[in-house]
Image 1 (cartoon, rainbow, N blue to C red):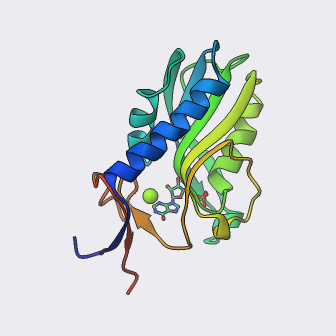
Image 2: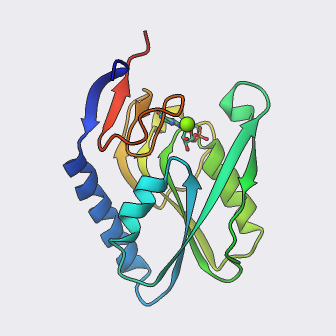
Length: 174
Ligand code: IMP
Ligand code: MG
């Protein structure tokens, strides 16, 4: 675990925060059905934990993106590598990602899926790197604020490593 610097949120803190978010979402969508769109791969853990704490009928689907273009994230184009199979027209949709950074990914996804005419589309993230935002994106449900540092664990990777860590940690950048 040589890259790990500091544990920011342990498994207990994460679980408590996910419960808090789930309670808000369950209250807001009470009496309705909700389609969860999990952004692969990072949001797998968040989705698996959150969905089990929701009290309304839930449908789950998975999407995967890739970005290309100039190296600056704000100018990158997001393409959908794997699209959802559920038809979201007329349905309430919640996009789930573990972290929002520049906002490029979720911003593009919200715009793309709005074109499919869902009844509503919102986004939920566990972590918010607000300082790095280059695109304003409405986030309906937000867990923790994190400073401008690279974090891993709870689904998030550094070169595909550390997704399995039960906690969220910062990594060394030297
Ligand atoms: P954005 O498009 O810049 O908002 O970036 C969102 C995506 O970048 C997330 O879905 C993650 O896959 C990845 N990402 C951003 N910051 C981090 C981080 O600190 N650790 C791991 N992945 C990150
Ligand atoms: Mg990654």
